[in-house]
Length: 181
Ligand code: HEC
Ligand code: HEC
Image (cartoon, rainbow, N blue to C red):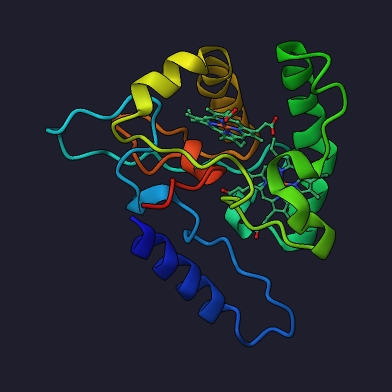
C-alpha cells in the first residue's frame, strides 16, 4: 500500500519537474485506483469486472474537472465547492464547522500554495483489522462522510462517485490517505 502511494507521488513529482514550483497535475494520478478499500465497508473479495462510469463536465461549464486550469479549479473551489460544503458541515456540527475554509480539507499546505489531494494532513484511514471498532466509535462522522461528503463532493466536481461497481469513482481516498503500514 505504502509503496503504491509513494510511486504515485513519485510519478506526480516527475510529471511536473519541468515547472519551477512543485505543482503536481491531478490527471488521474489522484484516482484511488490503486487502493483496494476506498469504501467504509470493505468490499467483498469476489467482484464482477467493474464498468467504470465516466465523469461529467463540472457544473456550469463544458470541461471535466481534470481539464480545468489550476486557476479555474481554485475559483470553482472558492465559489462553488466551499459554499455548498459549508452548508453540509454546519448542519452536521454547527459549533465545530461554523466556518470552513480551504484548510479543512487541504491542511496547512494551503499556506504554501499546496492543494494536492489526498491530503497527508487528514486522518489516515485504516480499513484493516481495527476498522470495525473504529467505525463503531466514529459512526456519526462516518455516516456523514459516506452519505454526504463523499457523494456531495463527487457531484460538485462532476466526478462519478465511488461504488462497488465503480471502484475508480470519487470516494474516501480522494481526500484521505491510507494508514501507513
Ligand atoms: C470539503 C473539502 C474541500 C475544501 C473545503 C476545499 N477543497 Fe480544494 N479540493 C478538494 C478535493 C477533494 C480536491 C481533489 C479533487 C480531485 O480528486 O482531483 C481538491 C482539489 C483542489 C485543487 C486542485 C489541486 C490539484 O493539485 O489538482 C485546488 C487548486 C483546490 N482544491 C483549491 C481549493 C481552495 C482554494 C479552497 C478554499 C477556497 C479549497 N480547495 C477548499 C476538497 C476541498
Ligand atoms: C471531500 C473530502 C473528504 C472525503 C471524500 C471524505 N472525507 Fe473523511 N474527512 C474529511 C475531512 C476534512 C475530515 C476532518 C474534519 C476535521 O478536521 O474536523 C474528515 C474526517 C473523517 C473521519 C474522522 C476521523 C477522526 O479521527 O475523527 C473519518 C472516520 C472519515 N473522515 C472517514 C471517511 C470515509 C470512510 C470516507 C469515505 C466514505 C471519507 N471520510 C470521505 C474529508 C473527506
